[in-house]
Image 1 (cartoon, helix red, strand yellow):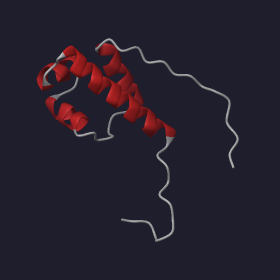
Image 2 (cartoon, one colour; image 1 turned 60 degrees about the vertical axis):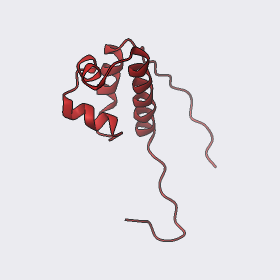
Image 3 (spheres, one colour; image 1 turned 90 degrees about the vertical axis):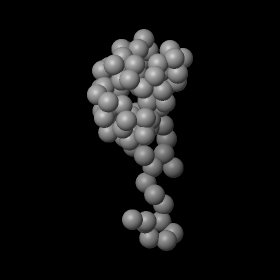
Image 4 (cartoon, helix red, strand yellow; image 1 turned 45 degrees about the vertical axis):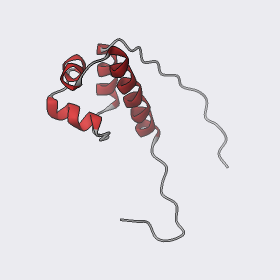
Length: 88
């Protein structure tokens, strides 16, 4: 459903943005490795159904699961936390 006219859609939460960024990096790494869909699923530890959802960009995987998947294909994931910024 659409929000009422004149209202803004809420921004995606930070964890969702992090999952999206990590998913894109995993996709790029899969391409770098030249893995086909079944090879990628096996390397990531996904079932074929999970791989389908992953490739369709469904936001169903936890950040933990994506970090583990990234590690399994040789990606190091680093997290940095900074002081809060001023909000207007």
